[in-house]
Length: 105
Image (cartoon, rainbow, N blue to C red):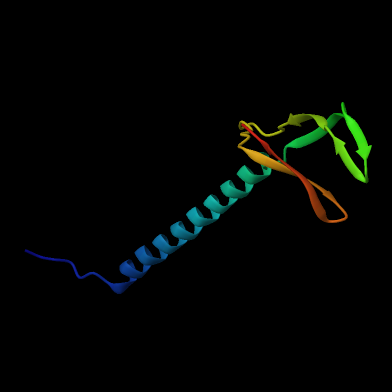
């Protein structure tokens, strides 16, 4: 049987084709990622305080005692659901904590 002689040019051409294809695919993947993040950019949820009430408030012997009610609205501009986990709220006066409450889910 006669086997034709293979030249190095064919191997070099195949290698160059693979490199060009790989670079093209990487470039295409990078563009897809950029477009995805531009179209589906995550936005922070909007939190607005609607009302604040102090149903009870008293001052006696230099001590202040009050009940604090706050009504808040959450708005999520993202397409995904906004998940609220257990949290806490701390009330501070002159950078010193004076009140603390847990906010349940």
